[in-house]
Image 1 (cartoon, rainbow, N blue to C red):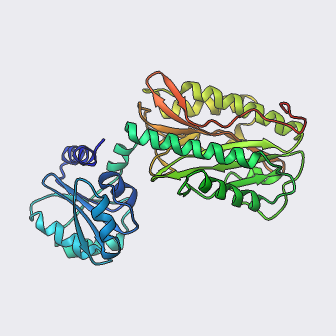
Image 2 (cartoon, one colour):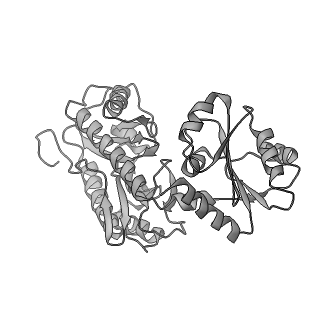
Image 3 (cartoon, one colour):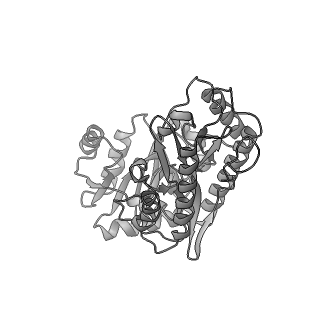
Length: 362
């Protein structure tokens, strides 16, 4: 889908809300709408005006990459140039700003420079980004493949005796070697009892034998992200962790089968949550089942008990139930999934069978 077409869809959404223009400050949204790649920019999108404002550090890059919008090189702060662009729209044009990403202080300063009030909006571009076009899906598919290959390289060698930090460092390097720009988020490697911490930071302690290791990684590839978690054994884990793994995998497979266009996100979450609770681990699953993935590693839709989102063909989501047993260890199994009218297309390719030290299923 062209950037101009994306901008047109945003204009339609704005007009449905009684607005004629939007100041876009979230950099992922700016990239989605214009193609800009950098760390300092904003866009003004209106029916008759499409403008990307950045500073001189990004002048050449912006002129080479921005599509469907004029490029204006301004001051590093950008607010004065944005204010001027808003004044150019005329005093009667109703304009909005992204209230979920612009601070109160910057909003106040922007209104002062524009000489007008701006209406707060939330999630207008995020709603458009939730459904991916074919080119976006292909980039996410490639990012998922990078993560698969990087993990396979690490698991081809031993984990026992290496520190979590060392494994995370080598995973980072493997992602880069396989073509990633960077990890799409800080890599998680959590072994033994630390696996009971869903967002554990890799520690300096060696990974022990006969336990589980939670490894959560993703690749950033040409701006798009992947996200995958595998839990692997370093021998024969305690029976309680083996049972938790079996329950988690069954719940994940059941939830995957429920992913399809038209499904309510809350209902897909409930499939996994009920399965885990039925086996006595309900209190050990403290987070949502998943989230959308695209230009950001966490975006709409949300698959959780409070979600109001509906799944649609073209969305890319994670399905990642977890069971965390304090003082013992944890399990999380996460696949990246393309939502289709006929069900899920799983983009993550790494094996999910739990392997013990004897080379067979633990």
